Length: 100
Image (cartoon, rainbow, N blue to C red):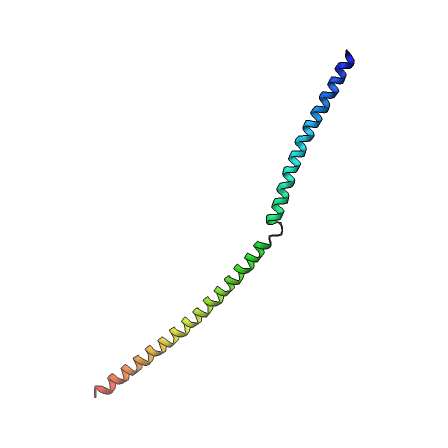
């Protein structure tokens, strides 16, 4: 009878070991699948690199356009001021010539 109990206990230990081994395998499979899916989606990040390159090019293009527009504005402002000085000088000269 003692042998029957010892065999039964050994079988229970085997069942517990197999149960925990099964749980460990399930956890390892889930972690492995998560790592695999994460690597496939974001590991190489080739799509993100392409998008980053495109956005960097767009930002550089917009910066260049902004600088071009700023210089065009500065030239227009300089020309406007020159025209205003010329107008003021011709108004002053025309008014002085017409009064005598």
